[in-house]
Figure 1 (cartoon, rainbow, N blue to C red):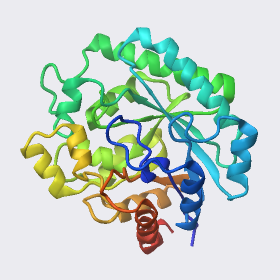
Figure 2: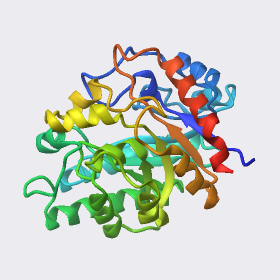
Figure 3: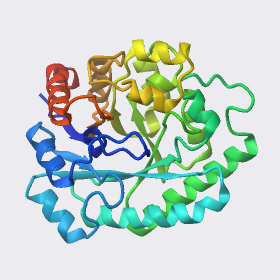
Length: 312
């Protein structure tokens, strides 16, 4: 059977990019040790400064644990042209570190909007319906796409690494149509898509979605996969009670794999049939009171083993 490469990320140990929703701050050494013990062979960088920023030290930490560095999340307020220069500088700083510790497969620069900072998008996460005032204008989309393109090209030309865009709830690229718009505005030579199953499920605005149809829609641009589940009862309540994104997070919208509405067997079958040979990365945002990260990571890995035959 073809081997599936599976990683996990610091956010599964409570290291989240949003203020006020972090779990217990677990040091990176313990996080990496537990990640390996739970059965994973790859990781992402986490917030800048969480792991060592010195290439030699970071390489040593990865190598003696047998881990591959898979990527790093860089948020940029792309609709604001004045934020582009600083965003590119930050992306290049991050990409240089990734390139210095790169293994096989090479890591990705994971670009995203500055999620959770725009009041309307944060309030409407999971129930965006295209009404006036919710999304970007044509002029704003142009600025957004140009910024993403410039950043991705700069990263590639300086480091040789490719950039994937992370569609994400509480940002301006959340719904399937918004993902399509961004991809249409950007150059496939520099920018691909990290398909995040949980954010796609919640961001689609319904009870679930057709996995094959979603994957087929973006097939040519999907370079990387994030595995996240979406708890349907929480999603339903969040929409009914008009929760904002952070309330949904605190109520466990992104549950352990196999306990929500994402069709992971179909995803693995789709990837296997297309010869996908990269990593899939498990993400489960762990907040205070949501349990022990290591044990959740183990259960997520065991679940993937139970359905791995679909990847053959």
